[in-house]
Image (tube, rainbow, N blue to C red; front, side, top):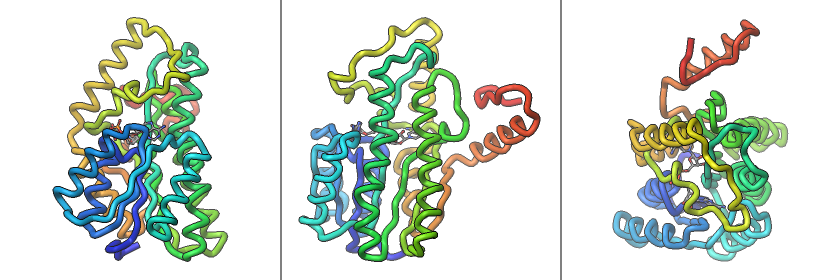
Length: 284
Ligand SMILES: NC(=O)c1ccc[n+]([C@@H]2O[C@H](COP(=O)([O-])OP(=O)(O)OC[C@H]3O[C@@H](n4cnc5c(N)ncnc54)[C@H](O)[C@@H]3O)[C@@H](O)[C@H]2O)c1
């Protein structure tokens, strides 16, 4: 979708990190904004920054838990009432937990898959028909390098992000089958970059609070993850800008960190050899 001016951007997880930067990039292009997040203070701060950098941007917000279909439906209704339709959807909200996969609790699985997997499922299910009706639109699903590389101590997150890659590829093919070439799809697959993702527990709901006691290895992995996120070389603002350019160029795969593509090729080579598991932290 090339001309984004005056079009409507819908962003989940718009109260922090990448979602906030996507909102700023969309506002800079003259788009109208619908922002949803469980963190209401976070979306208010995003709105403040939008108003500061792109005064007069038309924006609406809603407290939204993407894991709940009825809330995503209410979000879409709000979009129709306020703006008439949606043109660009970012299924961006995401959370993570660590720990050896056999120790993760049912609450860990329910929480992370609820946000990272079902959040995207409900976003696609609810907003695609609106785009089909108007014959135009673009959906960006935020996956991760973890959707291809499966590092240790992040089993649930890896599963959720592999699913987002699979869902995005299938969505693009299904839209092509339906003759809807004017609805674009992109899957964003970044490596680590500085945001609040390593501190996801801050927005964890009380009814999904039960989690593992971290042992020494899991604690080390969690600290390493936090360090990697904080020291990511590409800022969230650049990841957001690359994503908007990819939408304008109708690009499906988005890898802001070029090294990830080399690692994916190495993983394919490891699979071809049918021997040892591929370790992206220590590639051979
Ligand atoms: N930062 C990284 O290193 C990195 C790398 C690859 C992919 N990603 C992905 O980028 C996306 C954005 O995350 P981020 O890095 O900006 O982290 P972040 O923690 O800064 O932002 C995530 C936002 O999602 C919101 N959120 C959490 N649960 C929600 C729910 N149930 N409903 C609605 N909103 C909810 C949070 O409140 C927060 O505002 C995620 O999908 C994440 O997996 C991040």
